[in-house]
Length: 139
Image (tube, rainbow, N blue to C red; front, side):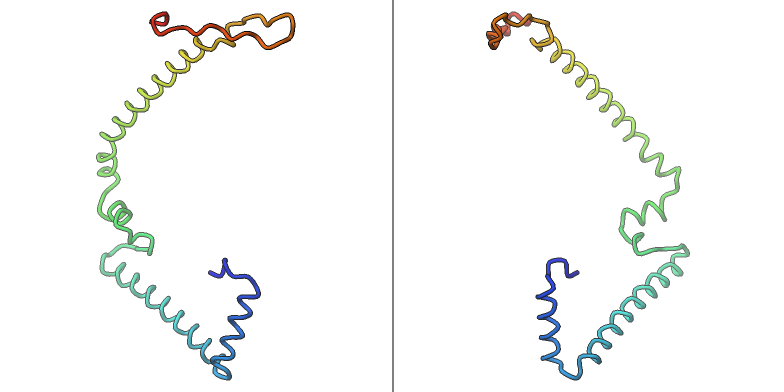
């Protein structure tokens, strides 16, 4: 919560709170803590009431609409029936992409002039650039 504050700023805020509230500072802190406890208790009671009304065990994380539908309205068979057509499309797409990736690697290896084993020059200087193949030569 106070990740972006350093110790001097926190100390200054505490000093400011002491100046503003004075002798009432302990009671103000106590009232704030009591309010936080009451809010937590209210949230817990609301989830308990909702669980009792729906007849299932509900956590706060389950109140997200997607998680709620997945957990409480769909059976495991229904979820698998929904996923099955999409899984087939995903598998086909993945196979196509893998095939294209493999083809591109083969083309890159065939076009790589360094892997053709050209001998280097005897003088030790950089080799002369190889002539570029034209598009017509490749097709």
